[in-house]
Image (cartoon, rainbow over all chains, first blue to last red; front, top):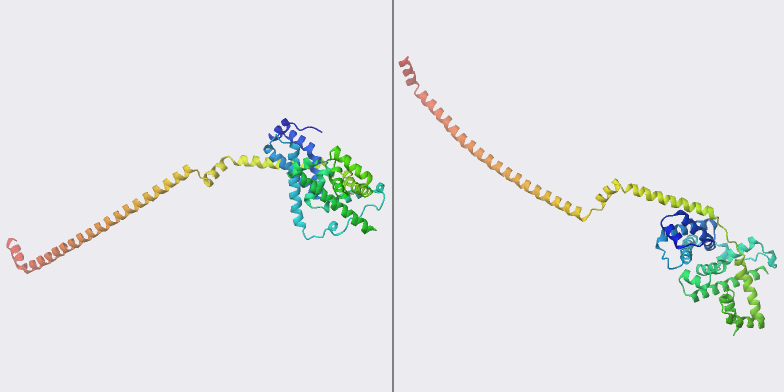
Length: 186
Length: 180
């Protein structure tokens, strides 16, 4: 992965398209994955990712280079994704949500070997849909993107203990959900 | 160390590798001797860690999103170019019309004041002229009246004279006839 130097940032600020593309290539994977896991739909995640990079394109000159570009990009991503998810959540209010109304079904009754890729994807999406936006954000950043508690705290501008509490509650909720699912299947 | 506290650690710092080696040693020692916490650790790994580790991470196409971003950047550049174009003559006219400067405001005020003063004084002059004309008309009327009086007097006089002449018709005729 290419390292984003101060020179690349300055050239991108001055409108150098290649420099901006370098930034895009380094952060696309993070931005697109986090967007997808927070908004849950591919088309919506594309919109959010586009919005994130346009925000970076327009506001890169406001980025103070003494802090990390990575944290700044993460923060822009989370802000855009959460804003979008909240807007969509308001629009969908009152609509029937299958995932909330039914306990999740385990992809396969026993054997972990039989869990195929698609079933795992469904499981991940259902687990995430069961969480509130704050818990979901922390789980996506920790369990999918592998950020440390400190990095999550810096990105979300919250104390490290709040990160710990959100992750604990999220995981407790997911365990309860799985137990209900197992009991439902039996 | 009780099981509740151990399970809290399992769910957070232990599973996420945020523990110091000393804490980790304490926790693992407990797990090795507690079957309930051992089961909890196994269930937690399977339920809340593994599904995410194995999850797909490339749902979106890098080139598709980049294409859309480039289109949007191009649109923004064109809009900025159009604005710059407009900022020529039209913008200057707009600026003058819609955002008057203090100097323009002062000038406008001075012109308006001058106009008011000019119009007012010209109205006064018109009034004076009208008054003069009225006076002149009155004078003329007076004169014409006096002229009428005079004229009347002359007519009267003439009539009188004629009458007189008439009354002295005999003399004139006789005198004429005398000279003739």
